[in-house]
Length: 208
Figure 1: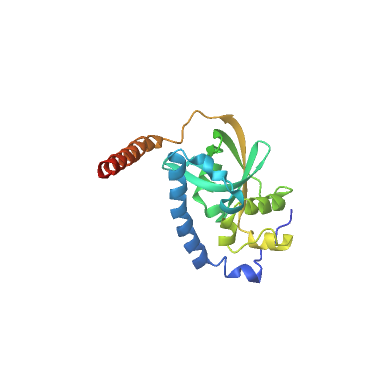
Figure 2: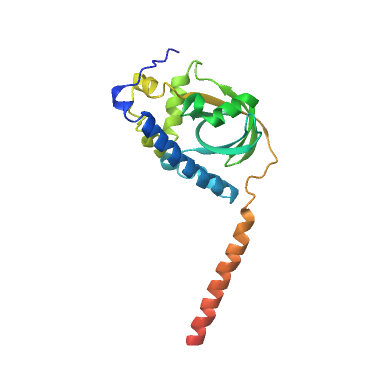
């Protein structure tokens, strides 16, 4: 597939370095909240409203040199036993470089965790259509980048995503890993809520 490296004029401001830096900071903060949601056992809510919040998975990867474990939420589009994601910041994306270096990652999905094989398919046939689908399945995130994938022409998709990398995650096998390691937090929260409700009911009866 031939991809045009030039950026369409209407996207130049959106894709300028200062804007991209701001978006990186914003999404980094949002990612922390998304990972916390999964760790609290609320991962099933990730796909609750795809047209708004998008389809979301979490990629567990490790630093190429440090071996440090990282968790990166990503938008995706499903296709059989594969999940397609975008490295919106191109080859500079740490998760992209880490995942390609090892070739395999652990993927958190709403139906459980999987071991997945990682492949860059940016230059394969059908990449543009899959890029469009991932953008559509990203909900508000695409709009945050100034993109409207439903209305954009093929040429505009090529221009606006010239630096993007399309990654295919092939689900190989289920993983025993449990991402909801903070689910226990709900026990004291529920106990505290029950105490407050009970104490309020007793106080109401006393006043009556």
